[in-house]
Image (cartoon, rainbow, N blue to C red; front, side, top):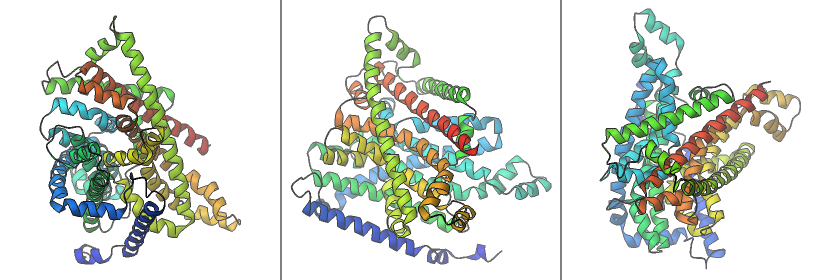
Length: 534
């Protein structure tokens, strides 16, 4: 046994980056202080933004048990969904690597699951399942894609010498998989689980927000909003955010203790996405998108049949098609869907563009001024884990029920993943390239624009692919909570009036739009990177 394997857990804890933790704590304290001062001197008469002290007083008045009881239900559903979603993802990842011809359909299934906006399919879960099952299913869907991609990436990222060694001793595919690949995949797997932990809490809260539950943070959020209890609404959002941050930090700590040899890794590997998308040009991109849509139709039909959903509630592809082409009402239905889709596309695009531009600018600032990055990068990672459903009502309270609120919600959910990916990509530019620019007397900014940003383009496009479905989810949620326009609001209203043909048609349209946008970004990425390569 080597000395590295004999390192005790307490020694690993001592090896943690305490200076980074101190910087992050200082950055968080600075933000809280600025928040308090801004409320006192700028928006004291507004009332929509309570100060941290007001939120703390509200939480003290309500008592610990008020939040803990609801949070326990949310965490329970999130944990069950986390277990089911991650277990299925890891199992399918093992199958994908062990049986290569199944890899592409499995990865496409993961992309389809990621492109299903949980806000859109939430009402369907309430129809298909009862009790806590909708929350568990939404939590499982929220973690499946990330863990699948992270595990497949890790299983591939292996020393070929070790595989040859196992093969030389007579080991087969399964020996290589479990004795070499799985151990090698642990850092990537934990990187995925770290992101999946707060995502599971988001899925559970969305399920509670949709109704059909007697308690939970999501239900408390709805009740406090309807009663216009603004400090309590913010307090519930803080509790949800703290839970997400604890889940993220706990998974990070376990990863650090179990894989002390691992460095920081990313689950967003551009090559893996490209292989799932199919590579190639326009024809292959269109074929891949159509294949994903075909997979959606098959899974749609299989779920209705497998769970014996009553025809009154469960409408299949044929019923939706008849809804769109009905001689009497089809034209009106199509026109209404088109109007709603235009609004959703506009809102999604605006949020995606604003969030991406802001994230790139902040990432550049972080790269130029390292102290700023050390102080606020930890805060950015923590804010990335804030559940969207907890954030959206607060944005609506602050900016009102208008287009600005819609753009802000979409921009926020786009901003944090892009910021983290771009900051890491800019920092990981090959040192030789930067040294060469320094030899020729280039300034820091010149090196950034000439070398670092071009080398970070793959990470930027990966971020766009990751953020695009999130931007659509943000637009749906904003339409529901703020503007009352677009597919998000229509999904909620059709469910409320039992217009199940219209509900399933809108969910199908939203999913198709998300898949096509994902494929389109992948196509643009290939064109741009090919141009840079030439």
